[in-house]
Image (tube, rainbow, N blue to C red; front, side, top):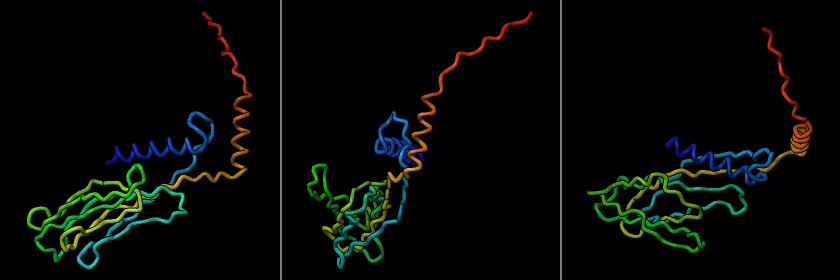
Length: 176
C-alpha cells in the first residue's frame, strides 16, 4: 500500500511539473494538495440507486475509490446484484455489475480501491438489500497560483545562476 502511495505521489509530482511549465525547465512545480474523505451509501428496496457527483466548475481532480460492498443487518438470503453506471474512455455511459452478494455464501466483497471518475451511479439491480458501499472520495488540487513577486524572484535567481562563470580549480604545488 505504501509503494502505491509513493508511486501516486511521484506521478502527481511529475504531472504538476508538466502543468507548471514542463519537465526539464527551471520553473518551480505547482503545489499539489491531496484530500481524502470517507464515502458511504446504502442501497435497499426503498433506495435502489445512488448517484455520486461533483460540481462541474471545480478544477480539482476527483476520484471515488471503492473499498467494500457488504450486506447489512436485515438482509435476506437472496442474490443482491449491484451495478455501477459510469462513463468509459469514449465518454459513453456504461452499466457494469460489480457484485453479486448473498447472505449464505458471499455477504461482502472487497474492491481494493476500485477507482472511478464521477459522476457514478450505483444501482441495486436485483434483491432487496440493504447493501452498504464504502470507500474514499479523493480530491487532488494542483495550484497554479504563483504571485508575481515569487515569479520575479525566481527569474532573477535564474539569471544570476546563468551569469556566474565557472572558474578552473587552482593547482596546489607539492612540497617535499
